[in-house]
Length: 162
Image (cartoon, rainbow, N blue to C red; front, top):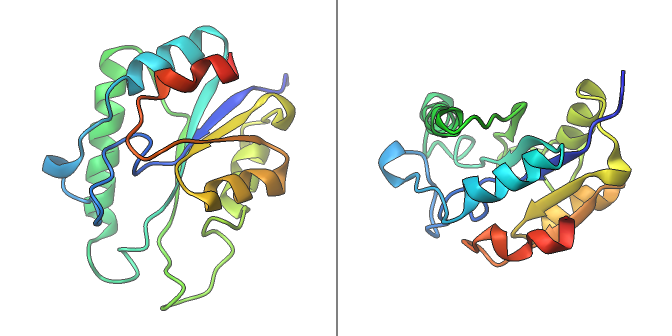
């Protein structure tokens, strides 16, 4: 099986608007300007897409897995309308004040699982995130990272990847 180039994506602040508080209602899940257009360009270059996201509000009892999944289902449906897809969405439901884990970024367990399952070529893959912990997780597995300011139109940084 041929190795695949992947763009790993953080969720809040990269895909959807970072509001400064937990986003778990579809009505608050606003996809950032230019996001899907950027993915279409990356898809044309052969990249696949996997989301890696910390969702600590679950451990903090701010929202449920079902509420989070409803947002993800909305995102998947919107992407499908324009012939885009996410291979997978990996999430860490933990918060350091409640539990310890290896899946919360800046740790890399979720990336490692995705790399193994989807036969990802780490040397030709990227992680786009808006927090230092995203870059640290990418570095741990040998994936290049691109840190953006939250809610940036990622079309503005595509030239650095393409």
